[in-house]
Image 1 (cartoon, rainbow, N blue to C red):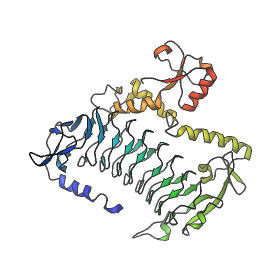
Image 2 (tube, rainbow, N blue to C red):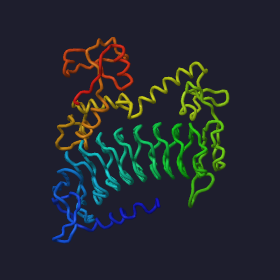
Image 3 (cartoon, rainbow, N blue to C red):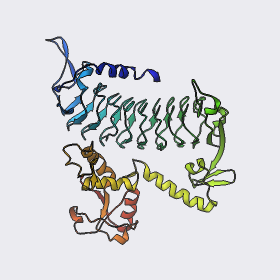
Image 4 (cartoon, helix red, strand yellow):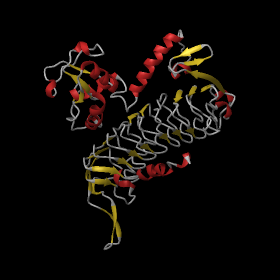
Length: 456
């Protein structure tokens, strides 16, 4: 099935190369049957325009369906797409044929992105998913040029083959609202070397990491089901299974680290170490001779023990970075646990502090475009950096700007240079930016102040 998914896209590319594209406009609302003409027509709740420069603007309310007549030529010349406020859903396959798109701006009103909306957009390197979207369909970013993405914690459902064939993908943030990573989810993501699976995930599908570039991966204890051949031909050096593997498919580790196909020999196989809790059932799975199985124990403080060695995290265990002693390891494990909680999209404003600073630069006007010119998000009408305005709206508010006002700087937990800002009754008071909800709660208890969001 995996090899057949994108045949239509390959055929489409060939077809489009011989056709002529022109600017256009029309209606793109939901289809209905017109009894007079005896045809299926689009409703006028949604309209679109495409100018000579390839800018497509979608306006109206409700669902955008495209033209609905499978005319693949009409989007050939589109280079950027702006979906205006009022549109709540992007329908199945509705951008089919827009293979030259480099930027997409989505509105806050959007709540659902149906199957294959962005599939095959090989020039689309980044996109911001608005914070009201709850469902995103299958093959959504398959065969795209996407390099990084943050899935907001409003999203509760992601489809199968979500990133399949996205060979440029290097960074993904999955929120702790997601419970399943479906079949072929990261299939062929050869540039993705690191990934954190949130502890909300309970199931991982068939060949979910087939031929992925991941070098090391931790499967959290929450995962109780993994499909067959989930790690086949992946680039893994180490895999940590924190929970019970007994219910995993018997072929879950089939061909992990192995080179399969023409030209492959045993010399092309990688040695893979699988770390699994004692008596967790990993030894009952099909393991090839390139796989070593290492048993570990984990105490109530989160310290991992392999033989006589102690480790403060599963990542350190996988890299064999041992603690000097149990006492120091217990302290390090507590810090690791706190940082891990803060790194999840559902419990943190930024994945890293640098990410927060970058976002603040965007809004304050300190960011530079590709020509070295300063700009400010929300005012770059020329769309100098794709999706800037949408990025600021959907991410800056929810990720970057939780803060506490009206307390002396000395009372704040982290000793950093304060940033002078004005917001409501915080005018003329010292203001300290903080970066996680956990920090905000601690400071609130310590100072008696409350925390709030700017620009809300």
